[in-house]
Amino acid sequence: RIGRPVRPHTLRRSMATFLLNRGVLEDAISTLLGHASTETTRAAYARLSIGTLKEQVEQALAQGRE
Image 1 (cartoon, helix red, strand yellow):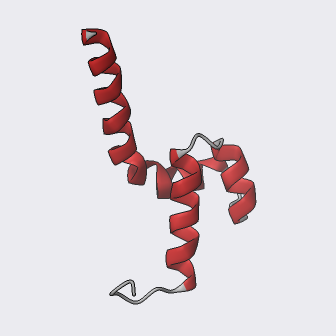
Image 2: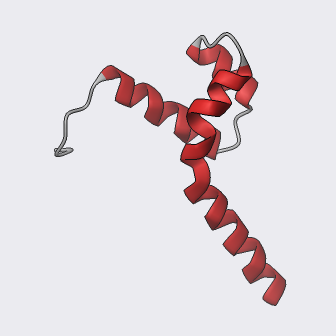
Image 3: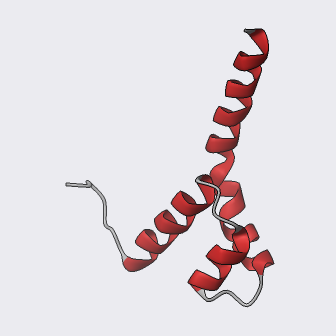
């Protein structure tokens, strides 16, 4: 029970974001999605990983304090 409509494009975006956040190269994701260029992938999905970026920066800062 997700609580909102889920369409194929929602699943596609979720998968791409999941892979990007786990370090899969943008080139690989671009190929998987059938994008003509990596720039298309970057424009669509890089902004979605800001939460992960924030977590990584916070973890790095916390490690620096130890």
